[in-house]
Image (spheres, chains in turn yellow, cyan):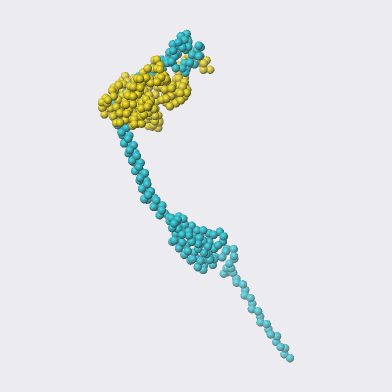
Length: 229
Length: 217
């Protein structure tokens, strides 16, 4: 398999939702897909079609386009970036096997998100089953994989600490909704569409998540005790 | 807006969508505590989003794709192997059942079509006694006997031809034997005179009547 030998040019994938709505101006929600969106959907569908017919270079292009997005989604379900890497790998294995089932009437990233969600859930169950083994000293990795990239190690440790601080005690569903809406910039309706939940449930989970996450800081306000009475 | 209202809004509201002219921001412009808190909250969520959204995946996408393809192929082969193994297991179980277990079960006892039923009349033995005699010989599946409840002196036996023949022979032997069944042991309630007991004295023969002798004149 060789990269870049396919007919479709390789380019880094930057999700629209992530690129325009990170604490910046919110994008136009509820509007029909723009020409750029439709072109991207068509390109994705073409790549998926080529890859499902056995074109490995098209699959490589697909992975190159969607790897950052899938990794970011995997971070929502993982406890640290290393686990997110494992989930990402599993997602693309499943994607390769299930590409024939993809119908091009919907965006490919929504389909990939569902695969990510299922893969993460299944891996979490497997990990819980093997929890005792993982706790043993023999299961701990002896090799430091970041020796060649100290900067990457710092970034990942920072990400892991952010995950621990913000989402340590948060239920999985609330964490997913909070990340999708508040950190990645999806609207509650989009989050509902991706997670398969009702918009009302999304809003309820979002409120609970925000309250739980912000409570520790809000408690530092002098009037907080009076409010909480 | 009061501080309580501001905190209530900050607790569940979207920090990204708070415009500069919103009531919360207007309150924050006059309240240093709320302003500090709002800044802290926004900074924390902004930094979290920044760290998580900009964290690049460590694996090379080309390697990732190659690994995914290899793993997918391997799993496909593994699935085929599992399916073939499962099918072989099913075939083995079926073959074993068909060649070993079922014939063994069939030979375990005669089928109902090979069983015969016959009623044997009894002249001496009671039906229960006849049943006690033939019971040990009727041990295969489907073999049994019926004891009539209406007092008829007969027993109905169901079994193979060999069992029926054996049962008839046994019953015939016991019935023809003088010391068996009805001819032998009387009920225990009847007292049997023992040999040591004294036999009843035989009646004395009546004395012959003496003829009256004629008187001598």
